[in-house]
Image (cartoon, rainbow, N blue to C red; front, top):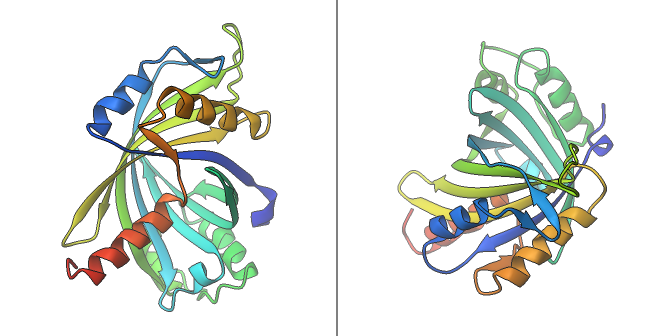
Length: 233
């Protein structure tokens, strides 16, 4: 198993202006975008906690490790090898259910990428195994996500992309910070569909959207640094 066997491609847009909630609700009701039919919206709750070793060794190696709760189930996500250009992000990604059978494989992938993790597996919960490996939480956030799938034709049953409308709250302990973003993920057919939908959104709402310059994890770290620099943390 290698991290490089799985490539994630997303087009990311930051929401600007007033009342971002109403704006995302408007997009959630659109019947089509960029000549593609949009399927019905579905709601999900994501709780993401990122982990790193004490010296920031994962991030120094351009890696990230996330423990995500999606509604009622847990998954491990390892990401690495990121590139971005004008809102389009490409990154190697490995995602697996978070359980005692998969954690050794996830840990082996990180070790294979140079991360110095311990091999102890004390405890019964994913957080126990992460701490036993020498990891600690570096970011905590909750996202309410509305997901819609994009299809090429009215009768097509295979979506080309997933349109995620995200309302994210970063929890920094003493401060909570909200952020609104749209992610368009490639599902089938390469990067053309995410880019086309992203460009169609920007053309339709030029004063409300701008291509993201970083992913949510990096953005959260940047917000935290600013809060610390201004004495708010």
